Image (tube, rainbow, N blue to C red; front, side, top):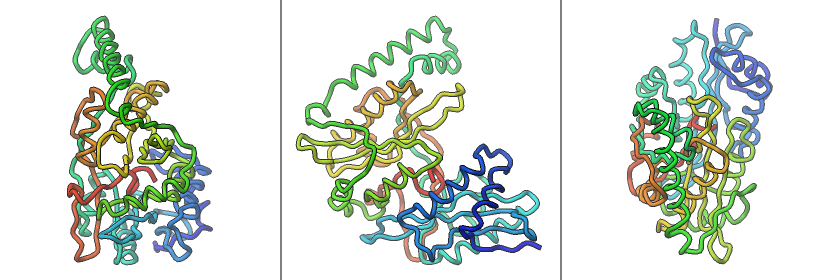
Length: 359
């Protein structure tokens, strides 16, 4: 007989063993234990009374788990704690328990927003049955190819160009991109961008200046960024700070290094967040160009900038010669009753690290 129990810290070893041996999983048991501590004990939003999620036991054997990770957003002028559903793992013979998992979790999260960024069609159908809606059916992305060999292979495969033509075309494209990145508006503004090891009080000052710009957005205090960048055991995140002539932080960019499916052992740099106190494009352009240079220097295949806001899309188009594509998205959210918000409103600016995207 199966039963659901709240996840406790003492459950970490058995849950880690279960997750590490789940079909298709490539993280070790030790890494899963580190991940659980990152989600909860090291999380600045976590409190002892927070229910970490639920474990399904078949007798004494773990048969499934569903994690609930807290974070903070700015919602209609107030800071609100939200749930981020992550890592639904359930053995095939118990799949019928999926709805019971969600029903139990949502009963405890009735008064707060709940996010999930799954791309699994089966899970998406279950979420919709529980009054979740997809805030973004698609995202516009701007791709900056930063490795000539990678681009040549893409041209060879997708455009059927022979290698003797594909590589010169790719090389000329990259040289043109590099030339544009070295010129333009960001240098005229005297802005400097550098990679940061830590997010200190200057990030709190930046957030105090900007926390009312959007009524629906992530909280961006130093503790939040320090946690997601430095404590994350799975993802390699890079934080860029943008400074003016007086060495004042005026914006930042958060990027994650992700593996490419093809070719093997190649990586891309994906933007998770661009944020600035200024409502003009120069800081965004400076940050995007810094990310492109980082990709070049580290031989990454490309830099990807999702269009979280119209100003980011305009800045991306001025940062080089991007390839623009539309990509399916899944940002599912269940709001408390009476709250109706969209992601495309000018009052909204969500980052790319909600739900299980990076956590």
